[in-house]
Amino acid sequence: MAGVLNLVSVGPGFADLIVPRAEAALKNSDVIVAYELYLRWIEPWLTGKEIHTPPLTQERERALLAIEKARSGAKVALISSGDIGIYAMAALAFDEMREDDDYEINVIPGITSANACASLLGSPLSHDFATLSLSDLLCPWDWIEQRGRHIAQADLACVLYNVQSAGRSQGVYRILNIMLESKSPKTLCGVVRNAYRPDQSVSIHLLEDLPSLQFDMLTTIVIGNRFTQRKRGFIFTPRGYNAWETPQEESFKQDLPQHAFWIFSGTSDGNALANHLALQGYPVVISTATEYGGDVAVQHCPGVSVWAGQQGVEARKQALQQYQARGLIDATHPYASLMSEQLMSLSQSLGIPYLRYERASTYSADSAQLCNSSQQAAEQAIALGKRIFLSTGSKDLATFLKAPDAEQCEWFVRVTPEPEFIQRAIDLGVPRSHICAMQGLFSQAFNEALWRDWAIDCVVSKDSGDAGGYQAKVAATQVLAIPLLVIERPKLNYPVMLSTFDDVLQHAQTWQ
Image (cartoon, rainbow, N blue to C red; front, top):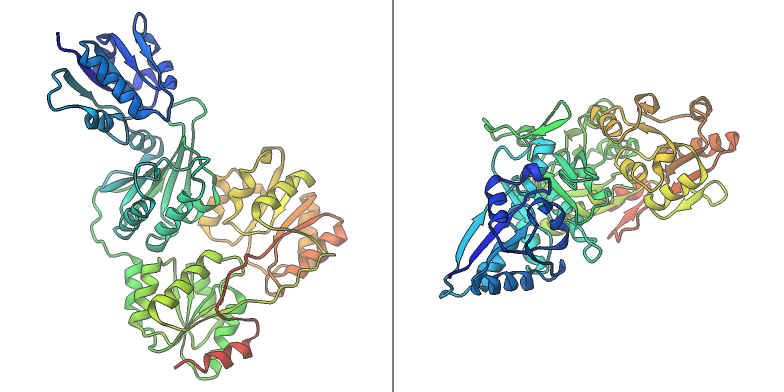
């Protein structure tokens, strides 16, 4: 008698999410072949079955075992979570079959990780989307990067599987940076861990926030596209896009000068540098990452053209080419290392001169404790204080608020008064009463009054220099006798780095 091979999908793991056809296949099978974890999900249908559980890394052995049992005439169920035909066991089973095998084959579909995670987030996959596995066990890593780049360039919504493991800790960050090259940093995303299982967690983030988070093999990342929206705590992607053109494309219709110095900034000293060059008669374009930064630049930089808003690498490339930029001056914040890396890469690919302007450091060892990363600063802050004030901006909030034992502390934050930055803090669990949303600079007296009223017992800052109000923070913490932790500036291999306006002007005058 011919055997039966049932390729059974059991979805996320809850019995009520296992489809009736899968339940029937389990009941009618004599032999169960599965990873041991899956047995808990199908326990009601295991009585009297012959059960085999090769370990997690022996997927092909599991497939071969199930096939051999079916060849011997048994009714076999080979089990997979999610959908067995998507990044799962079905392909291995078909790969090991022979053309002359005569056992019956039944493929029973299930709820995929993409489906399950999307349902918890809302409806982010309502239009075209892609899935990408980050496991390079069966696929070369350069292929994964190439596919990720095409997904980003097409601005497809996507789901990242097999996100991170002990042996693959950095790949996900490489893919996220590739996404940021072409997709808007403000793209709405979801991070889901253990969907529809115990210890489930669901959170919504901006794409630019994801590189600061930690993941594991139980995590799935869902990345939206330029049309993905947020409503009532969910995200969704409309089915109809109407006009594909967005404000990013509209920016190319601006009347920007040709052969100008392009200053990428958004800081007060970057604006001052733009004014300095413009007063010498040079055409200048200043690019800011936010509309708010653009408004500030318009107010403080008369005679300077402003290109404002979040732009991807491809948009910057097109703009620099279209307006035949004379040179590229990177005056971004000292901690905007990702942006600096992208600008250096653009300079090389386009053959446009690049220089880095960076405000001088004012850190001294007798004024604060230096930490080599946000992660180390989080650990030290939690060890030193219970009411911790973060003056580190919005991008690193997740590093602090998701750190081990962070829930034992009360967190107070100061962010730029952009709605998205305030929302980011709220989403991470910061009470509204603990958010100071104001534009600096802040005086020593202001810092003292705020930290005294909030009973702050530890302050975390960055080495932001005089332009960032660093000395006012130092003086305030010394008066209040509370520790100040300072995150060290990232170290990049800049081809040219200058710290005075006159040096920048002298160097830029050599550009043809």
